[in-house]
Length: 371
Image 1 (cartoon, rainbow, N blue to C red):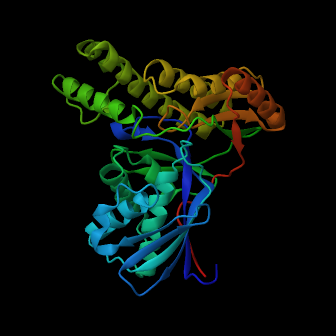
Image 2 (cartoon, one colour):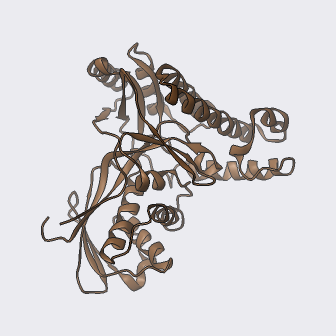
């Protein structure tokens, strides 16, 4: 890739625990992955952004003065949205050629979209000679996802993609953006990421519907309580005031409240090296996502059941937006091969889908290399 000027990457992510509470102002525990979207970029002296991909035959040209008009593209819409939000924030967009190389599987719940948005903005800033403010890049990337791609997401994915740190998870307060890095020391255990191979599309799924439900629940509870977000609601307050909610909204809020508590306990468990407790919390998180938040589905449930039924696995749950995508499991390191074989066969028999396992490490977020 010597013909390009820079190589700029941003990471996919997992979320150890704290699912669907980022947009409710909760604390979450994401980590950046070594699965990345990498942008090879060079200036081209025009008013165009020329996009190409290592994995696609498509080529797309974006007019820098018309970036708002590309949200209907099959490929290139995330890049256009990211560039537009960066431009609207007052940054100069320079004509360039971008070769995109993505190793984050699409539709997997590992945030390929955030990796694309963050790396695109970081690459545009790099060739314009701007210093990289990772938090600002994450915020503009989130704006692109919400206003351009139409997914009303929280900040977690883009923040993890931009700001992740090798071998650490982030304890991120999505209300204040205060972030604490915790070393990820799992002792005799390892994280196994498994894709159920049923693709999900958050725009077409019930993701935005869940977002609307939590907004509605917050409005109702704010008539009785002085809270700015659902994550501020205590378990005691929920038991007292949750009766004002419909059955469905009550279940959604129960997930938010209990998942926020699970993040708090997981933080203590991780700091104390109590990995068994962490595994127990993963199992409880999945049960709540399935029963209260109702975002799992037949395939992720079958995959998690296959994982949880093995003695070498102490915890497994769905991660990401839901309705498909990936699970994470805490597995005894010396039992990983047996775990994968059993989970693959059991899941295939139950659903007809062939699960896929990813070998990945906890990595840094944005990285820039001069070529």
